[in-house]
Length: 260
Length: 266
Image (cartoon, rainbow over all chains, first blue to last red):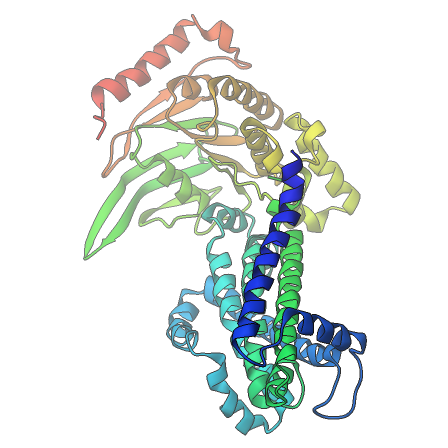
């Protein structure tokens, strides 16, 4: 019984000891590689003044992360606004599916970063470019999962709609969306996860501000401790984003609102 | 029989295309007149197209040849005047018992009723199937028999001209099934609905029906015989056990299904 509560805390702490030991050994092997202690001290310094702003290229960690998050949420929101209606259309209409499916299948495997130079040429501005790249990243899982959700609506429910002569509008809101919403949120959760992966690489290329830029900038400054801090912070924030999306998804899933 | 039938199924064929130019003739030349307030059951082996007939009347499937007329109007598409009780209840799992019925009432009768009248109307049909205590439960929280009662209440709440039931009690255990059959007979006595029931259960057919329509086997299934069940209502299953008319009807159906149109298990 006790082990049930202690293990989730104790075992990761034990493993942390092993990780720090290996890390320290690597730091001995590679001259200049930051030791765990150095990174810890740097982390305290970085977090002590997260909001400082000395103009472009020199801003606190919270401002860097905030910028990255704002771009992710901007592109993500656009992807939802476009992707959910498109997914509904593709799921409900065989013709729309036939028309769009080939393009979705071809565009989906393209790394969103391949769009970045084109977006930079079109928008000539870093922030819009980053938002567009995140939009392209996020939209495919949202479209595909929304369409999947629509197609998973049972024929029986649709027959109920037909007998009651529901209008297309009523059918979408009263029958299709309640079934599809959990699928849509699964798509959104996937999208947000990938968007958070992609923004780091995008910002390394665009520069200016953002956590990706910050990490690349610290590489150029030979400040390797900050790179490790960046990795840890990106991971923690990614974890929080995913957990939040999971909670929101459960809230909208009728199967998880206390009913089985 | 009155001059004009209430529901007239006139020389109806149903052909399903199989692809590659082939087709499957499920129903051939089905003719049936159904009177108002009548309970008719359609019985036959699986694959005889009995559910197809129901889907054609419901308008969920299209007629290949022939016509179906309800009060002289052609049936071309689904509509609330032909409510369907589906075999697997088809309740919307994200709505409570009350909301499932309310949604149907709001859509079909909503324009004529005030909010308080809608509430009263929904509660009337919930009470009719004795589910007052479960009105705020969700379909996932109630038993199969209760779900089917909600399905019946939902279908009746929109005041259909015909109630179509597709093997409504097929998925239930025999005790629950008996209970629901009694519910259905009591409700039909109150409301006078015209009811068409698809079943494969001989006792159910005799107990519930004024007439039993027996289907031949598919492909090209059609109506083999029609049996009048001359038993007074209300009917009590215990008293019927040794009733000569009940036994006669039962024998006639069993003779039809297992001798004239026996079907090997494929």
